[in-house]
Image (cartoon, rainbow, N blue to C red; front, side, top):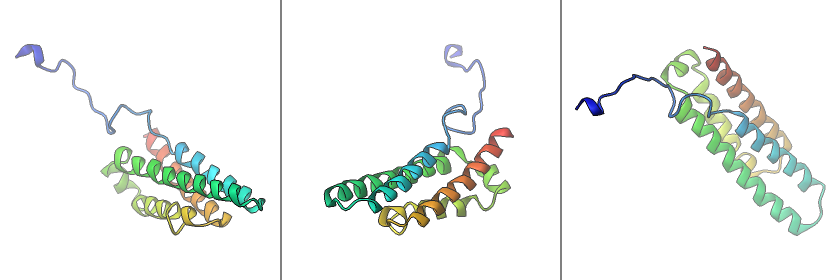
Amino acid sequence: MRLFAPTVDVKAHCDLPCGVYDPAQARIEAESIKAVIAKVADSDDPDFRTRAVLIKEQRSELVKHHLWVLWTDYFKPPHFEKYPQLHTLVNEATKLAGATGTKGSLDAEVADQLLAKIDEIAEIFWETKKA
Protein backbone atom coordinates (compact mmCIF):
# COMPACT_ATOMS: atom_id res chain seq x y z
CA MET A 1 0.00 0.00 0.00
CA ARG A 2 2.89 2.36 0.67
CA LEU A 3 3.87 1.98 -2.97
CA PHE A 4 0.71 3.84 -4.02
CA ALA A 5 0.67 6.37 -1.19
CA PRO A 6 1.18 9.97 -2.27
CA THR A 7 4.60 11.31 -1.49
CA VAL A 8 3.81 14.99 -2.07
CA ASP A 9 0.57 16.90 -1.66
CA VAL A 10 -0.03 19.40 -4.42
CA LYS A 11 -2.78 21.95 -4.83
CA ALA A 12 -3.83 23.79 -7.98
CA HIS A 13 -6.89 25.93 -8.52
CA CYS A 14 -7.12 24.93 -12.19
CA ASP A 15 -7.04 21.68 -14.16
CA LEU A 16 -3.30 22.07 -14.62
CA PRO A 17 -0.81 24.18 -12.75
CA CYS A 18 -1.28 27.79 -13.80
CA GLY A 19 0.16 29.06 -17.00
CA VAL A 20 -2.07 27.37 -19.55
CA TYR A 21 -4.97 29.85 -19.46
CA ASP A 22 -4.91 33.28 -21.05
CA PRO A 23 -7.72 35.61 -22.19
CA ALA A 24 -5.44 36.68 -25.05
CA GLN A 25 -6.74 33.69 -26.99
CA ALA A 26 -10.26 35.14 -26.98
CA ARG A 27 -8.90 38.58 -27.82
CA ILE A 28 -6.95 37.34 -30.84
CA GLU A 29 -10.08 35.72 -32.24
CA ALA A 30 -12.13 38.87 -31.56
CA GLU A 31 -9.51 40.98 -33.36
CA SER A 32 -9.84 38.60 -36.31
CA ILE A 33 -13.60 39.10 -36.28
CA LYS A 34 -13.17 42.85 -36.41
CA ALA A 35 -10.70 42.55 -39.31
CA VAL A 36 -13.05 40.25 -41.23
CA ILE A 37 -15.92 42.71 -40.78
CA ALA A 38 -13.74 45.46 -42.30
CA LYS A 39 -12.74 43.23 -45.23
CA VAL A 40 -16.37 42.29 -45.94
CA ALA A 41 -17.32 45.97 -45.95
CA ASP A 42 -14.59 46.67 -48.52
CA SER A 43 -15.52 43.85 -50.90
CA ASP A 44 -18.20 43.47 -53.56
CA ASP A 45 -17.19 39.89 -54.38
CA PRO A 46 -20.05 37.64 -53.21
CA ASP A 47 -17.82 34.56 -53.00
CA PHE A 48 -15.26 36.37 -50.88
CA ARG A 49 -17.98 37.78 -48.65
CA THR A 50 -19.49 34.32 -48.14
CA ARG A 51 -16.12 32.83 -47.16
CA ALA A 52 -15.38 35.80 -44.89
CA VAL A 53 -18.73 35.49 -43.08
CA LEU A 54 -18.10 31.78 -42.51
CA ILE A 55 -14.66 32.55 -41.05
CA LYS A 56 -16.15 35.30 -38.86
CA GLU A 57 -18.74 32.86 -37.52
CA GLN A 58 -16.04 30.27 -36.74
CA ARG A 59 -13.93 32.89 -34.94
CA SER A 60 -17.00 33.93 -32.92
CA GLU A 61 -17.44 30.33 -31.77
CA LEU A 62 -13.77 30.24 -30.77
CA VAL A 63 -14.19 33.41 -28.70
CA LYS A 64 -17.06 31.77 -26.85
CA HIS A 65 -15.03 28.61 -26.34
CA HIS A 66 -12.00 30.45 -24.92
CA LEU A 67 -14.18 32.52 -22.58
CA TRP A 68 -16.05 29.45 -21.37
CA VAL A 69 -12.78 27.66 -20.66
CA LEU A 70 -11.68 30.58 -18.50
CA TRP A 71 -15.07 30.69 -16.80
CA THR A 72 -15.36 26.96 -16.13
CA ASP A 73 -11.74 25.84 -15.72
CA TYR A 74 -9.76 28.83 -14.47
CA PHE A 75 -12.05 31.06 -12.40
CA LYS A 76 -13.05 29.52 -9.07
CA PRO A 77 -15.49 30.51 -6.28
CA PRO A 78 -13.00 32.86 -4.55
CA HIS A 79 -12.65 34.80 -7.82
CA PHE A 80 -16.42 35.10 -8.18
CA GLU A 81 -16.68 36.27 -4.58
CA LYS A 82 -14.03 38.94 -5.06
CA TYR A 83 -15.33 39.97 -8.52
CA PRO A 84 -19.13 39.53 -8.36
CA GLN A 85 -19.49 41.10 -11.82
CA LEU A 86 -17.46 38.29 -13.41
CA HIS A 87 -20.42 36.00 -14.17
CA THR A 88 -22.22 38.88 -15.88
CA LEU A 89 -19.12 39.91 -17.83
CA VAL A 90 -18.57 36.42 -19.20
CA ASN A 91 -22.27 36.09 -20.03
CA GLU A 92 -22.34 39.44 -21.83
CA ALA A 93 -19.11 38.69 -23.71
CA THR A 94 -20.27 35.28 -24.89
CA LYS A 95 -23.58 36.77 -26.03
CA LEU A 96 -21.63 39.47 -27.92
CA ALA A 97 -19.82 36.65 -29.71
CA GLY A 98 -23.04 34.70 -30.33
CA ALA A 99 -25.85 34.78 -32.86
CA THR A 100 -27.12 38.18 -31.72
CA GLY A 101 -23.54 39.51 -31.64
CA THR A 102 -20.55 39.11 -33.92
CA LYS A 103 -21.57 35.66 -35.15
CA GLY A 104 -24.77 37.02 -36.65
CA SER A 105 -23.74 40.58 -37.45
CA LEU A 106 -21.34 42.57 -39.58
CA ASP A 107 -21.45 45.54 -37.21
CA ALA A 108 -17.96 46.74 -36.28
CA GLU A 109 -19.37 48.41 -33.17
CA VAL A 110 -20.49 45.02 -31.86
CA ALA A 111 -16.94 43.72 -32.42
CA ASP A 112 -15.62 46.71 -30.45
CA GLN A 113 -18.06 45.96 -27.61
CA LEU A 114 -16.86 42.35 -27.58
CA LEU A 115 -13.23 43.46 -27.40
CA ALA A 116 -14.07 45.80 -24.51
CA LYS A 117 -15.75 42.98 -22.54
CA ILE A 118 -12.79 40.68 -23.17
CA ASP A 119 -10.50 43.43 -21.88
CA GLU A 120 -12.57 43.70 -18.69
CA ILE A 121 -12.34 39.94 -18.18
CA ALA A 122 -8.61 40.03 -18.90
CA GLU A 123 -8.10 42.75 -16.29
CA ILE A 124 -9.72 40.57 -13.65
CA PHE A 125 -7.81 37.52 -14.88
CA TRP A 126 -4.44 39.27 -14.51
CA GLU A 127 -5.41 40.60 -11.07
CA THR A 128 -6.08 37.02 -9.98
CA LYS A 129 -2.71 35.92 -11.33
CA LYS A 130 -0.97 38.49 -9.09
CA ALA A 131 -2.70 37.13 -5.98
